[in-house]
Length: 451
Image (cartoon, rainbow, N blue to C red; front, top):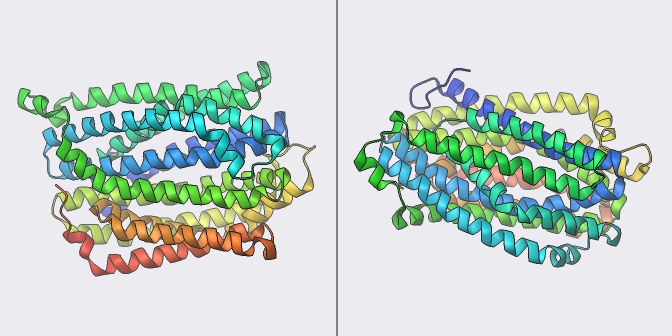
């Protein structure tokens, strides 16, 4: 696959072909997350599927913190790359890795201790609570590896290299599937086996990713002279710049995930069968939004590099081009879900599972299939703001998105049933897009200075 230059090649081609490896990589990542659910749903049972689903929302909170941290690191790194200040670029990378390694250890300890209390506070059904706690404690034991894997992927993307994370995700996904099958079918470990497989696969990928990054930074492309190497240690000033971008993003990402936990507490109140169906639906949703989020991340890197090079007009051209990309993905998703929604949900649920689980998951997909374009529009607009380091309005828009989803779910679940949970989703996406787009039109993002 040709490596396109975001500073010189046609914006449409550079965005699409930079996003494509991220899309494929994230699809593989979602694939093995989905395999976790398929294996436990088909081979262990409906309650095991519900337990993994209850755990998934909590683990997402912590991964979103990692992604928010990666955003802070990637924006600074991309802007130094665009300005060709390679010594400072390396320092920013090392500063990010050291800082977030410490954060991940603290969060892992917190999650291990508190996961049971959190699940009980979210009204997790009693028949799945023990399995959910077991899954989470294994997960949090390996959180530093999972956390750093996501940060390292953000760094590679910031360097304009979205292929290395793709190759590592393919490796990790295939390894995870084999470990899932071995631990669940051969060793009979059930939910615990799925958790161990995930931690082992991503942990190994994190180690390999770190070694590859060190080799990349030591190469001639980014300078390897003595003066540059002396800079590559740790910078409090750069950490402060990252924190100014990362903290709002981490707060936004984690609060949105916490909001989704609160939304799941509404679903929990309808019982484990409905939760199993909802779990199936959101697993498919997580796959459908992959190309939208990847395109938004590509726009973010494109924006950061071109603003670092002083070319705001090229950013605007790339942003307009990105609409065509997300429109194409939206039409494709609509067609696939219209044709195969029933078969997709059935792949998660064994023959012995109840009709309520299937009906819930199928209804979720049938409704959501029309609205994935809106998260694409939101993602590319937020991508410009993130790439520029203009995170206040971006954060505010996402929090309003969250507020709408939580309010609608809690206020109307008693009237509309569990369907209120997914009726709220496109309302939040559209409000988020409108707010971010109106701020984009002001052009103030193009005048921000970070480096």
